[in-house]
Amino acid sequence: MTERASEADDSATWQRARELFGAARRITALTGAGVSTASGIPDFRGPDGVWTRNPQAARLSDIDSYLADEDVRAQAWRARAENPAWHAEPNAAHRAFVDLDASGRLGALLTQNIDELHQRAGLARDRVLELHGTMRRTVCVHCGATGAMTDALQRVAEGERDPDCRSCGGILKSATVFFGQALDADVLREARRASLDCDLFVAAGTSLSVYPAAAFAELAAKAGAKLIICNAEPTPYDEIADAVLRGPLTEVLPALAAAPLIDSAEPLRTWGDPTTWEQL
Ligand code: NAD
Image 1 (cartoon, protein in one colour):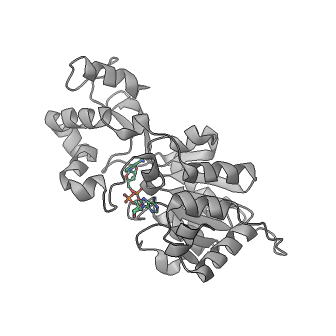
Image 2 (tube, rainbow, N blue to C red):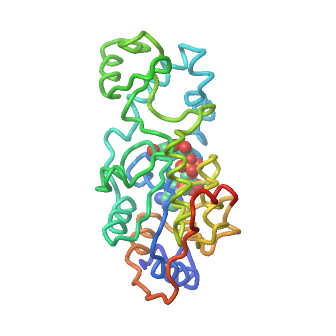
């Protein structure tokens, strides 16, 4: 535990969180924009968040506004080009999950982030479930063709206001899930499985206010997993958490990942036949 992390959270909370971490054998994590703020990418709803400062910016991620209005699309392309994520590097919070994975205890990492910094930190692509997709690819809303975002942004830099799909002429968007769009069914199923099949669920850097992502914390807790929430601000699930830590994630997560292993007499609890999980 570092001095700054301990200042934000009392020592009893820290001890409890480290014990939970040390005793856990299969950890599922859910991360949000707060994991990447130390890399220079603002979150949406924190004090310096993109939407806190400019509530209109949310329209750029609304599928109906995007499809209906060419001006919204032109603004969205400019915002994509200027996204600080293009120049961002992973930070200690991202690396903590790589260390956890190397220790063999990371079941899966569910992320709401679209910046791919978890993968860039060294987590294998198949360990990361991108609930909201990736900003580094484009997809055509008509034919589904995908491409590199850098190619589309090159066309914007050359003067195109709203680059269309090269295959069918349809509207192109980033390969992220907009408000009003459904999450990928396979990713959702895997995320649900990983939430039920863990003995500790850690939610980090997320306001837990976007659904269905936020509901995985509750699902895991209902199924019997311990729940740790690491977030600077309160979340709707703090009350059901076994520990809530408010310190900076670049300190909190490495300290948790380094918590000494506790030999537990209890075997890992899982919940049997996945077909029965629908009832939870
Ligand atoms: P959010 O903005 O709703 O919440 C982020 C939370 O992180 C806030 O409550 C804030 O207090 C906390 N936080 C920020 N920095 C922190 C730090 N250093 N230490 C501790 N806590 C910190 O983010 P969300 O819950 O992920 O939902 C936002 C949506 O926006 C997601 O759907 C995501 O796809 C998208 N988004 C992604 C990125 C990214 O990829 N980096 C950035 C912005 C938004």
